[in-house]
Image 1 (cartoon, rainbow, N blue to C red):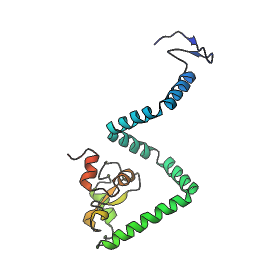
Image 2: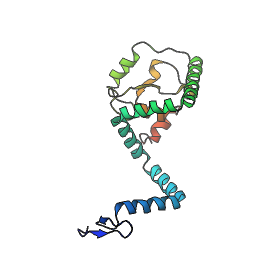
Image 3: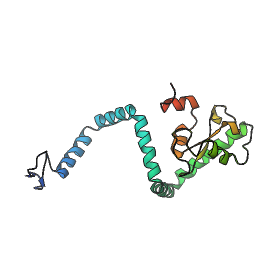
Image 4: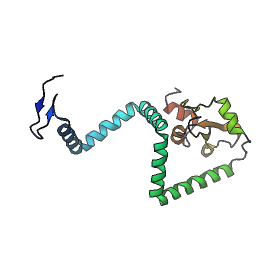
Length: 180
């Protein structure tokens, strides 16, 4: 790196290196706009190549910024009450229908029992469930014929539970790179 300072021909700021930061940033932004499709294609390719790394980083960021996420989520829900109300209505009606179709009842104290059995760790990513609100998840989803019984329940962190949704457990773990 050169220690010599230069003067930018556009904005007349002093800089060292190849270009002044504001002008370089403006140039890069203009290039991204002009080559939007190529940038999107490269981004998707990079994401698919490093999907697990991105998800792990996002999960870690979420855990570190839990309060910010809660505030932002609450603000979004307040700004979009119709969308949120519809989302909750669909989710609860689907859940009720699936539970009605599946016989079985969960025992009292199951949550504490699972916390102890899983040593307060997410069954998928092993994040600490004591720091966040864990989700009780059906190992074999009700939508795929799973039962609503104690033996079909596990604790997952929010991120893992949201990404699992109603996927088959083997398919989900393969997508995470755990099973062949």
